[in-house]
Length: 174
Image (cartoon, rainbow, N blue to C red; front, side, top):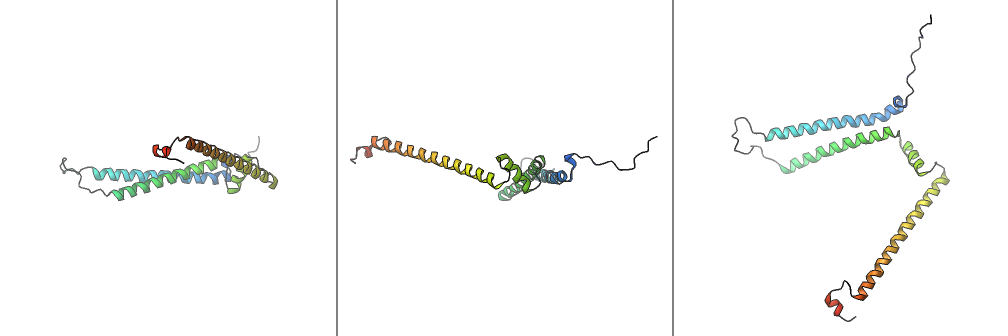
């Protein structure tokens, strides 16, 4: 009969359960909990607002609600709630993207972006990419200048023919 092993089973080697992945997942989890909390705040605010507008039991139904509405305060409260909701959603989305793309630091992000540009991190390849970018910018600016020259010549030709001038300007001697 084989003896049962007394050693503990080794932890799974999946990249999803690694300490690095768990650390990256924490930002997503924090964002998700922040979304949950901001949704609760929003719901509580809406319920409170709705409850303040419903008439009391013994109040006649043909009168407006007795509460006065402060417009600037309501607008500020709505802006604050919307800001909290957007910030929490962006935190959750950012954490999820960083986790899914396996980015744990600024260096990881630099490496992924440079890899997408075809830069391997050596100084020479970075210079090549910068030169290509400068050439592209120069070609874009050159095309823009050519378009401006064409527009200027068309405008001058129109002025010579009297197109776009008022009747008094056409009849006036030059």
